[in-house]
Structure formats: structure tokens, C-alpha cells
Length: 545
Image (cartoon, rainbow, N blue to C red; front, side, top):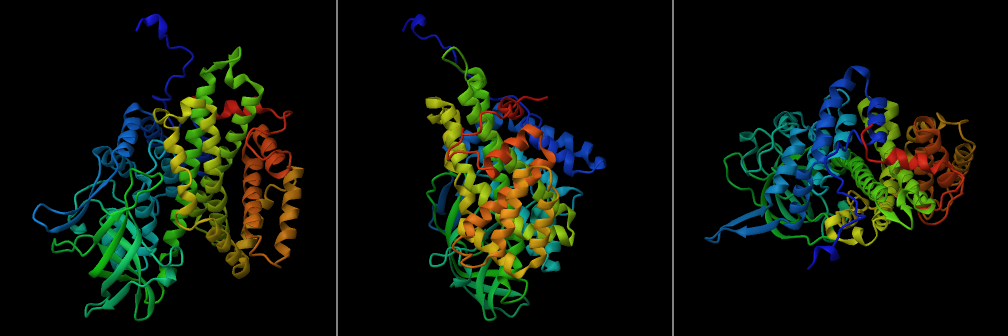
């Protein structure tokens, strides 16, 4: 074919070779806001290094390879012995190893640890989201293990280690370990109290044998798992090591891997237990109470993971339209496209600001901040994860047909987008969890109202939304049927209050006008045209300042 018939022009260059952290003004400002000055300089360097790695061509290639070559189950060796191993592409191990080395499983005892880890998680998972699952489970397991100081002393140093070792060996022989989780069963799903897995006590203190199954077991090649089972005293939490101290494999029969919509790089498995050795964590009958802090921490990662997907989708859309011309000018300068991009940028900024505020509450660790988290985490998990899929779909449309092609990376983002809304409790579960906190924990509601009240008087639309929310909270008649509406309003009011306090005026004005002031349509790109939309889009541009 003659070269003159195939001239490539008007195509955006790939968004590569940039600092994902440094090019995100919203995230860098949040880190500066929530970290004390003595920690800020210490945190900036590693986050910038992680950002450059996340924006590199190498990380993009690892992400593509890990998803194009999903994990494979090997149940038996060549002689017929059960091995129950999951084989991953080398790119998966490189992604996971880089994350562990960067400290993405280490937050609980580091000063400012949750802010630093949440920022790093938001940066690094933009390169590839699937390997975030074992990172999240490992990080979140620490508070559950601390229920038993002896178990925590043995396992916590391994879980917070900066060393990644992929081989299956006794945990005590490794420099670092990962943890997964198995709670849901065929008959129960989210209703973990319906578990039929049985735990029979042995003569050794805290030792049991399990018989049963798990319908979803996350990260099945991990070194250990937290599982729930019915002990004589009721539903109980247990630690299941993948390899026993003497080097033999624990009974952990992987029946199959789930064939999922997205999250293709990560393995989710159905597993069977038949005389599987475990150690009890916490008291018999207190399984949900023992594991609830782990669930809350993973829910924050669902919020952060969705914020990461949003940010990457918006960055790609703004980048593409900055280079792509149509109808006599750059797409980014067209009024209607600018409206779409600004609307997407608002949603992304609100998600990031909220995720980082929750991380800061974890670091504070005070009674009032813990009470605030009791409502804010499920409310944020409900709303932010719900907004992810429509945002990514609209961002993909900004790239037109190019965005519908796998090479753009946008289809992978879209397949991943619904995941965080399902994992760790779907939308209804989050809404009902907020209702329980409202009805049983008055300190939680008080802490939430104090937080949103800090922005009172700064924007009339926010003030009106707070008044309307108080009216809804005062009427408990039929509250379960309208729980989604209530939790949506709570999340929006919380996001609005944070943006009014911390975002530039043009961002806060646009958010309050659209999300709280009812000056908005039913799709992205319906912001009032009188707003300063160009500044909102420019703020979202993935360029280091």
C-alpha cells in the first residue's frame, strides 16, 4: 500500500511517561492537607517515585499482560497428586511485588500511614486494578488478627513487610506474606450468618478442623485466609494457613476459578474444606464482630479503587480531547465537550477528596473520628462505587471509537468499574449498614453532622441540602424503603461540604450547583453553562505543575 494512502494524523499520543501522583492536583493537595509538615517531605518522594512507575510504559505493559493472560488453575500434578495451585503471568507478580515494596500493605503503625497508603493505592492501581485485591485483604486483615495477640505477633510483621515472595511455603519461613478472605457461600452470599461450614475443635488450644465450602475465596494463592465457620459456640472467625508449619499443604481444594466480567488478572475461587486445620481468631460466636474491622478497611479500599478508576478514566479523556481536533478546533475547547469533561472531573475530584478524608480519619484514631467512619465509610462505599461505572462509560465515549478498542485501555477500566460496588457488600448492604448506625449509634450521626456542619454558611445550596437532610433523618417512617435515597443524599452532602472547604471556588460552585442545587440533568455534560468549566477541566489535566 502506498504511504500516501495511510498518513496517520490527528491521533492523541499515549498517556505514558508521566508522574501519576504529581500530575493529580487533587490528590497532591489532599496529601499536603492531611499529612503534618514533618511527614510531608518524607512522603512526597516515595509517592512521586510510585507515580512515575505507575505512569510508565513498563507498568502499562504489565497491566495489559496480566489481563490478557489470566490466572490458570492447576488442581493436580503429573502424578495425580492434588496441588491446588493457581498460576499467574509474570507481569502479575511484578505488579504485586512493586506494590508490596512500596508499602501498600503497611499502614496501621506508620505515622500518617493510612493517608500515605491510600494515596499510593490510588496511584498504583491506576496501572492495573486486579492485583489490588490481595493488597487490600492483606492490609485489612491486621485489625482482625490483633484480636489474638499471639497470632498477630506471628503474622503481622509478615503482612506489613516490604518483601514479596510468591512461592508457597510455611509462613514462618518467609520474609513477607499475603492474606486472602473466604466468607460467602453458595446459599448465603452477603448473609454470612447462614454459613454451613463446620468447625470441630481439637485438643490444642484454639485449633479446629473445617468441613465445608466457600463460594468466593479471594486471592487463593495467598499464604493464609480469614474464614468464617460455625463452631459449637456459633459463627466464628478462623485463620487458615495455606501451608502448615511442617511444610505440608493444608486441605484447600480449589474447585474452579470464577469467570468474571472484569478483574481478569485476579483469581477468585470456589474452595472446599475437608479436615482443614485452622486457628480460632477471637471468641466463638463472635465471628462477625471479629472480622468487621477488616470489612470496613476493605470498603475504604473499594472507595479508593473506584476513585482510582475514575481518575484514570478522566485523565485519559482530558488527554485525548486535548490533542484531538474536530470541526475546526480541539475537542477540549468545544463548549459541549468541555461541559462533559468538567462534569466528569467534578465526580472524580469529589471521590478522591472523600477517600482521602476517610483515610485521615483512620490515622486520627479518636473516638469522634471512629464514630464518623461508622457512617461515612458505608455511605461513601455506596455512592462512590455506584458512580464509577457511568463515569467510565462517559469517559470512554469522549474517545469515540478509539475508546471502544482494547488497545486504548478504556474497555478494561469499564469492565472493572462495577466491581467495587459488589465486593464487600453491595449497594443495599451499605445502605442498610448506614441505617443500623443511625438507629443504634447516636455518636456516629453526631460525628457525621459535625463534619458536614464545618462548611455551613459557605454555600447556600449546601446549607439547604443539610436542612433537607435533617428533615429526612427526622422521619423514620418507612426508612428502609428509601434508604438508598437517604444515603445518596448523605454522601453528596458530605462531598459538597469537603469541596466547599478545600476545593477551588469554581469546583465547589459547580458541584453544589449540580449535585445539591438541582441545576443538573440526568447525564454527564449537563452542568449550567454559566459556570467556569474551563478551569475545572484544566485542573483535571494530567500534567505535572
